[in-house]
Image (cartoon, rainbow, N blue to C red):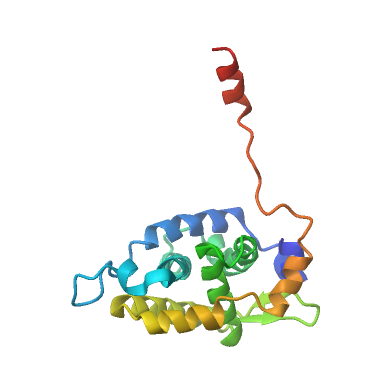
Length: 202
């Protein structure tokens, strides 16, 4: 995916450690922010209705990246993760969006990717590959984290709906990359050969 989606200069910066650590932070940062609308007992899932899952998955993604940056800045994680995490996340975006924008994770990724494109933190090169703008990405991650947390704190259905409608789509420049990935499996079905051998003997 990185060879198709990223500029040549960034392809070698995709890191398993950065990918795996961000996945951990994603799961942990589901817990950041309120679980009910501020000042009420209304659950966020009830307030945001059909848009809750996409907003929540996007929040966990981007706030997880924000948290990783904080850990890197404080020297609490391998400094190399701090150097590779933005480029790795960009490659991971194309992995996730291939599941489709009808699924919460894919739609959440589309929202983040398009927001970053609109705000100049991610750019499209002349050859159709994508790159991080190192000067803008850190502040953009913090700002977008704040937007998602505010939507959730307010239980703002209208803002969530507007964001999903405007940004939760696959734009042409993204589709062109996805078209070049058609021969790459979207997912891999694991074969548990040891379990099969064990159960066959019973």
